[in-house]
Image (cartoon, rainbow, N blue to C red; front, top):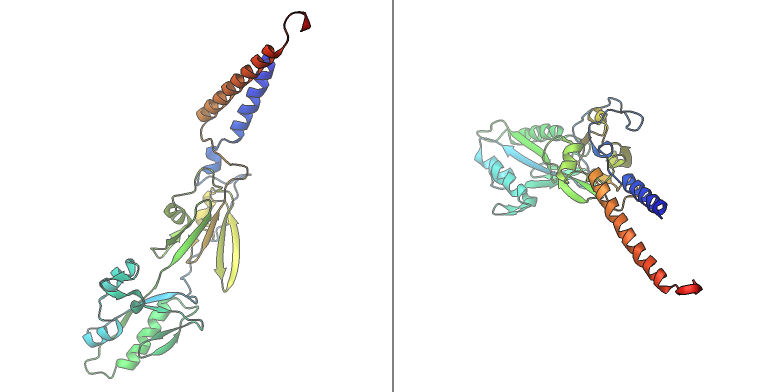
Length: 282
């Protein structure tokens, strides 16, 4: 009987240890080895190229108040930024008044200028185009002075699906994969950092790339910076329906399970003994 208990205990302990999450599986910034891949130094950051469906925030600066009111819906830059930061429903009016949609043809429709092609261009290029167009259009006005424009993409988001899901705003020019994961509450212990999938549209083609977030080489790789509309897929570790984080927990769970098993065994054995006939008929 003692041998049976020992076998059961070893099986339980082995199962619990196999389910244990080790630091090797969950820590970031680990040096590459046979298990953790290395990535070539391919880090490059390019300015975002505008796509169909993007919305552009445009503010025109001029010392001429007539021009300010004509192109900025009567508001100032801080008011408009406040409006956009509050989801488009504030005292300053409609969110759409301050932004320009890149239509299906890749254009924005700007007052007094008309259709301006912006698809595939950076916000800096659109800024220069607007300043040139407005300067040509308005330079004959009495008291005309230099026009300056501010152009940025608004409503830039990325999504995380799988183990934890949500849609989040990109609130800075460059956002790293670690900042993106932190916004979602980080990857939990039983979510896989080993095979994160990055779904991204490049020149109209959807690509899927897989990387290991545990590798310290990630900071020099093509996976380090995310882009608007990226989808990050984080899955559960295979075979893990529940988690045990520490060795002490493993021991506690194993001991409790073993004790419960002994208790059940004792009850069953007692019932069997009581059911046996007494005396010579054993």
